[in-house]
Length: 207
Image (tube, rainbow, N blue to C red; front, side, top):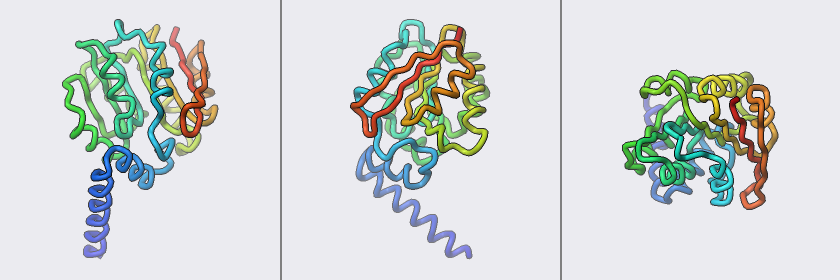
């Protein structure tokens, strides 16, 4: 039994080394293979999606930006490029493959990659010295998350965001938008065809 377990672990490590050798796309695809229900797509988001999603953010007033499901950092780098010098970016993911990769490839004192669940965002934010987040971004596939997890994340997100802040989501179904609308009085929506597959964008603003 121990031998079989050791062989399995060696196999996982080998697959991850091969994925990393192929670059970010390889790591992203390996993460999808390991946890398909937790990764929204087999390829990262397009530049068009990134630019549209981040366009409404008031970067001058953003002290803390949080992202759920960062993958290989497709949004992390554009966020850090826009983020003020004294701001911080916290990313949360349940996949250690992604967290390890991000911690090794992003060298920025404003960046914090946390292995954990988005359901625990309030505790994670407090543990890093903040009471609230200004913006929370999520590409999590809410339509395939285990029962009860999506609603719990949406509720926790509403609690952690400051008044005037927003919950930003991009997904291939209406699930994230509908969960956002349960908690946020105003929800703006958009759509981008320049993504594989095309996706629905939503911004829930906290009054």
